[in-house]
Image (cartoon, rainbow, N blue to C red; front, side, top):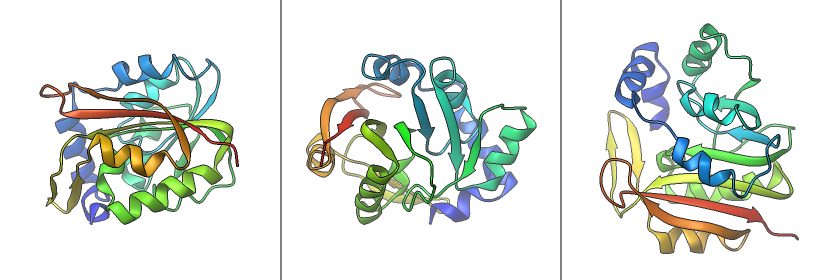
Length: 191
């Protein structure tokens, strides 16, 4: 469902205007406590590149999005990062990363798609690699303008990630309202 929304230039520009003033600086500051500077990071859903820019101050970042429109916008901005057209579920790439990062991107997946994504993230993470993902907190699930918005609870996220990742941080944070968001940082478990 999300694909219909972000695939046109008009909807990409709408999203950029809506997201203006929001970034993941707070999340990235927390990530820095768990991930060494200079590590390789794949950002899922780079969109307008706001977090890509911040991440790139500390890490070697590959940006990605399933929307060619967003990647074209990043190229127009002269972003020097490598950019991949990438689906957050299948994650079809031969590259291996130290960390996978997303800021409110995996919320666009159904629960089944999120399970698939978690398992596929394991295949493109180095041994001991990390994930850093943010989600909207709650139990809402709705479609708006063709985009799915699937909220999650701490209990759900812990149960879905903990079989594959040592949960290093799982906490609420405030984006628009108190405790409206969740940050999860985990380290890939050894086989």
